[in-house]
Image (cartoon, rainbow, N blue to C red; front, top):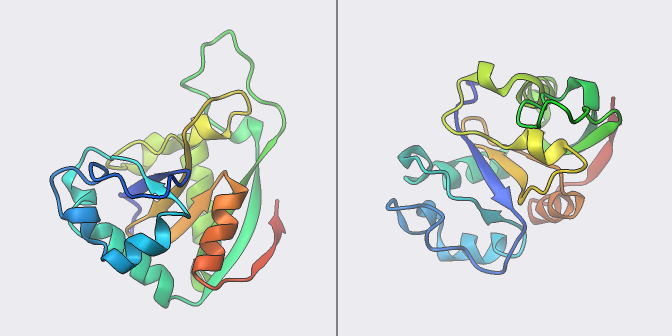
Length: 181
């Protein structure tokens, strides 16, 4: 796998693709009208603020997911393994577990899980182009509009929203497996 540098944030679907989601780059980030029709009720794209996300990286990653031998599974991350850096110091860390829902290539399962855990625990060490907001989304008390991610360098999805994950799996024709710890 290539290093993860570009991770597109996803929001709950609103039934349309926001024309400003991809800034001044290609219309719909390079997605065809057919692709827009397929994804607009599954997830929405958050504006990332960097041109690397605007010039065809999203359709390239979606094609990689489409072409891969895919698997869907969930994993749990302990609250103590999540970097709660954004929280005020007087607030305790979430003591429970959070579930992440994943869709990736079968041959990348272990590395994808390791990278997601790294994003949750130490995102800064990954040299990502833009913040993922995953840590905030994993906090039970947080109000995060971001609830899904598409890693663009290798083509995999992960979600905190189970319905978005299930709908993405259905879109890509993937059967859902069990949970890993």
